[in-house]
Length: 116
Image (cartoon, rainbow, N blue to C red):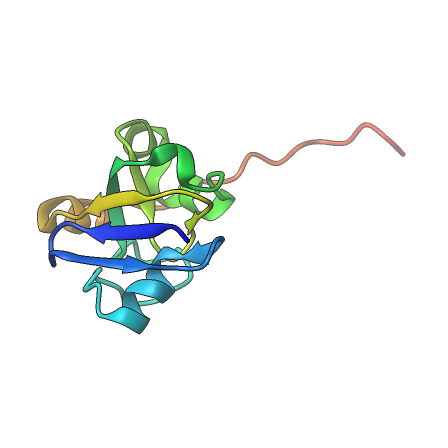
């Protein structure tokens, strides 16, 4: 079973594969900040310090809230991210969280259909 190492709270927990990072933090007191649980507020933003290859693909809501800038720096949203089949280490920073929380979500690009 994969492990999540919550660096800030100095806790390591064993979790099932495909487990939500935020749900596991709530269940086992990982102390990852959170508020809405739906990718809207940005409170659960974290940085993957190790094991990024064991995180699932970035969701649309993460892309909207974080934008490419934060995603490229290794940040994800705990409520939208799942650990797959290996160990990860995550950390969070209050200053980054405040910036992300204030960031307005990117608008989705609408595809125009030419089919009539």
